[in-house]
Image (tube, rainbow, N blue to C red; front, side, top):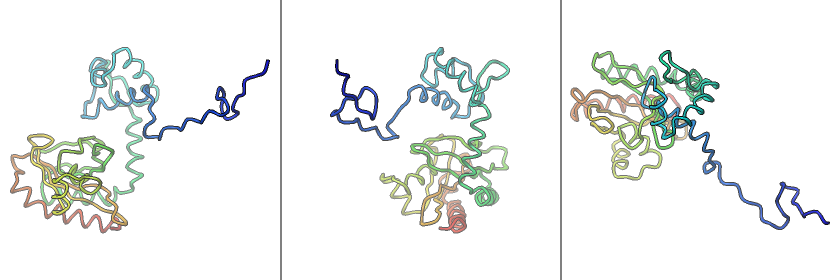
Length: 250
């Protein structure tokens, strides 16, 4: 009995059958990995500790599934158990975040600019980068005022709301009227968009060959940072963003 005519390129593939083209990397999915990442994303709003039920609900998983995935994440240091039995982020995301920031090699230039903005405006200053359909606070300098905006470095926020989000979209692929206005003005102002109590001003920071590196901005409570105050602060934000761009090779 003759053996089947098998393509040496792979078991079970008969000769003459066209090879299946692999999907682009961005379209390939491993559901177990995505579910595990959903557990980590549950902490994106700054939650310090979550119960198993809360973790599962935020990730859209059954508690039994969340429990199995959490065990693997704990073994690799992505999650840890709190003293009260809850789950919190482990040391691995912090370590990877440090490597991520080091890859940009911008801290020595950006942190002084943030400090100057805080001194000039009295509000919290931050530097944001685009990560797909969200923005990441890569660096921040807190306001010295007792009532202030508190944002952790590494926090992820929506890209379609807030001054820095509008800047990041305007100078990448944003095509809405708001993005046209930002490109024309050279900065963005938002009042109560992401949070009804928060206002912000941001301007783009460019590097070599005019490549957008991120958005430099300030944020504060609307009770002292209304539309008029934000417009008055905008020139200082633009000035610091342009100075930083020159320093970074723009």
